[in-house]
Image (tube, helix red, strand yellow):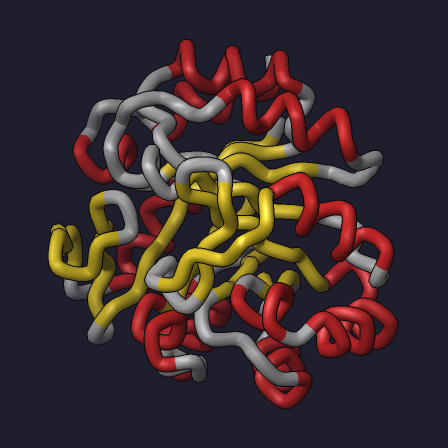
Length: 238
């Protein structure tokens, strides 16, 4: 299982939100490039970046910052937040992003997912962000009437071959991942699942690995020091 450190961008800074609430923000660094370099030095193989401003506004806002990070590290990079057109995907891939995450666009514009998967293949990841079992979109501000499993099934039929599941209620809380929801998703799709939300300890990572997920994204626990990335990477590979 791969451990992927998260870099959430808002106003050009590296921040973390509590349960996706834009009013409950903690700023951890004004230099996201330095943060990326630190995670690389500590053994990360990939970075997960979210453009929070882009997610709320519906258009990627941090192309320049993302490009600087891609150029500064030798890591694979995946990016989400505000990606709602083929043009945005093209621009991100063009600056060196290896995977592009579609969230709101996947639910609101299935045709885009089909076209994106046909054109970019494994570079496309569909994000399934759920609160109380139901998918939420537009920076987690809008609740949809679909369950996570329904979205995974629908997107798989359109060509999606990798999914990122976030339990919004666990995100940024250090309360532990939603293992039952993850097990359900692993069981309903043959494609890889990346888990996000709530990871606080090495024990959480060990339990996640037992669910069969491909990777785990870790955010607040790394920034607060609750979890050491070097140890996390070692445990996930053992």
